[in-house]
Length: 289
Image 1 (cartoon, rainbow, N blue to C red):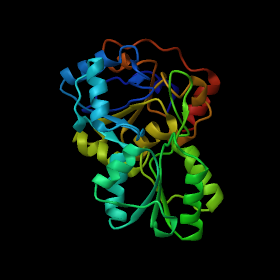
Image 2: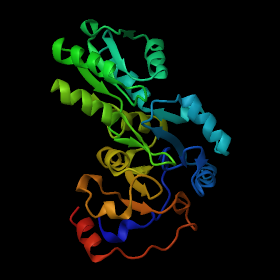
Image 3: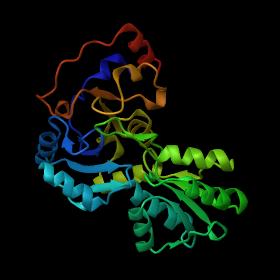
Image 4: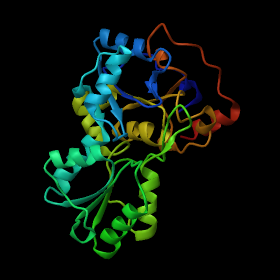
């Protein structure tokens, strides 16, 4: 990647995958120009899906939130880390008994998908770790006993260290997973949300677009952009969420975006703003990729 590609993409893609938190909205408010941009992309005949690592809400919930902002969306347009988790477990461990470190919605979703859940560490085949605002020592102890003492495998929903919110964010799944891995000495066999291949496959299947003609638009280098790069999609970083311009100078090659925009309207031809040339230090870092 070169410094000249730090601005907006020069053309539209056949399909767009939009991250939600920090990209389309922050908390209960849409980000500037986001909803109008989504409407215009749809009007141009391009496919859109919305992608989130947050397991605290259903696809229906997210679709309703987007419609409340004025963006056309259905549950089928939303891909969540929970979708990727169900798909992974059905493939890798369809008969497994699950001990889940997660909130009520995740437990209900897994039970509805046909999985057997347990609270007993000695009965667990897989420990599932998720973004959990009710995480406590009792849950950590149960996971410790299941994994370290009884040999249960470890799977996590997403690698995000925190979830962006208007007041600065909340500790996310990576924090809970780190605690379990630290005390058990185990490493999760799969982290199924972005940037995993499981999530990328689900996105491309919904878009029905070739990877080279699809774009992942998000605010995180380590999830949104890494997934785009590994899947062959264009990675478009928007600077409205977790990533600052300074972060680009130290990003590893596999996490560098193809394009960088300030806000979502820059995705639209004729709405793009002129960017200043990168500093010499930024350009050197980007060119090394």
